[in-house]
Length: 111
Image: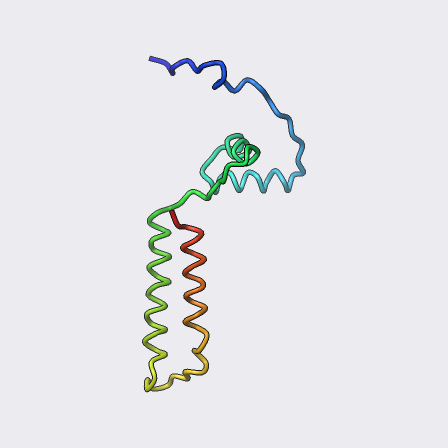
């Protein structure tokens, strides 16, 4: 059994020719690959104004977030007052920087 026949308004019958520099083409191909799409589908989505997100490797993303969280826990432990060898002034901005990094990563890889 073959594919169902598409209605006239669903058929992709029109072409759009586009000239790019080799660098532009390479960029588009890389972006399409990162999104897990063919170049044609990626270009169609971008041209039509749809948001295209990078394909997510759920296991990899979870591992990255888990590792960043572990680092934050360790930094918090190290920065506790009274720990030997710790300079609280040197670690002052690290917690805020890590929180910012986690927010960026979560925003990029979020739902």
